[in-house]
Amino acid sequence: MKEEMDRLSLLSLQIDKKTSKSAFQARDTYDHLKEFLSNHPHLKQKNMHITIIGGGIVGLMSAFFLQKCGFTITILEKKSFGGAASGRNGGGVLSLGRELSEIPFARLSAEIWSSLHQEKIDTKYVSSGHVMVARNEVEQEKLFAAQELYLTAGLKVKVLSPDELKCMVPDLTSEIKMGLFSETDGQSYPFTTMTGLLKYLKEHGATVINPCEVVDFKISNKTIDYAITEKGKFQSDAFLFCCGPWTTEICKKLNEQVVVIPRRSQILVSEIVNKRRIHPFVTGNSLYLRQTHAGNILFGGGGSWETNGFDVSNTNYALEFFSSRLLEFFPNYRNKQLIRAFAGTVELTEDHLPYFGELNTLDNAFISGGYNGHGYGMSAVMGKLMAYSLTYQLNRRVNPIHDPILSRFSVARSKKKAGKHNV
Image (cartoon, rainbow, N blue to C red; front, side, top):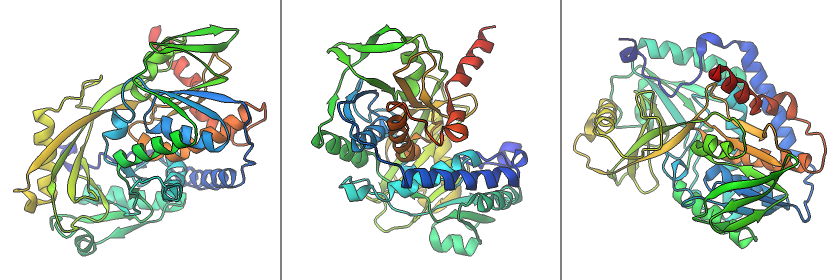
């Protein structure tokens, strides 16, 4: 019964556990991060080589910003670039719905996404906004409480009446209470984004290799000497692991305990709807959806009912579940044809925070992963932060935002939890 009354599954914000103090902290964190990214000294690296393990969106965005900081880049991808969740997701670049601690990063990421076209990267990004829809009084009450916290945290959100919602999303059912709208959220197209990043990196001298599975490492004196692959050995000054759901697997080769849980997430695609009928990114009723730049309706999501692991086959259950949820919101779409379904693997951590920074036992190994299904949208800001962080780290300088902003994402917390689980 509770699930029937509350289907705001993409509202990660735990309203009953958050206070205005947490919201003010989120606003302050945004200001500190914004200043850091705007006033970074842009130290140019010479003869400093970084090898990135993993060619998903987080790896490619990190490579993009590291390259702009002057690092020489090699990227090793086990299969195909963007072939997992990075190319199989809804394309949302969202702040609304996120936990307060994630809001500063999500806001900044949207700002970075909106500027990537200046580098000739065809993201097809649009600041479409994002509306979360309440079907009943229970959901309405949650969104009103969320609005207050988000406004305090600096996120521009406003309540939309049913009539205002219908103007924005004309095919939406009238059986709704209200919507909460974030004007700064956006959406993009994963395929052209990945293609554009790869093109940019190659044109600016990066070495990108696939398929190329890393099978082991040569380690001495707390340093990775080289990665061992089926295509030879790769030496580097530093190694950055952006392995998404495969993080735990690759870290075992380094004798590092980093707990990431892989889980399937499924998406359905309708035939093209010629006129623009859905303008913002829409969430609610246990799914997300958007109308793509080509006109298709893309909808889906995931949940605790999904399979843990690397199975990316589609299921009859998901087809029925998401189709029924879509038709409850958009009853006029009953005759729209489904033309495609696909699935990706998202990466979950126990506390829903990513891993970012140094590994525990190695001096030249770093990680960016565990984004809990938010990696696509968050990749821009986390890639830029990684690039700037490594300019400090590898020049043996103190990063001014390491404590307390970035240190909370340390992998040390995973080691402690893994130890508890082993007892």
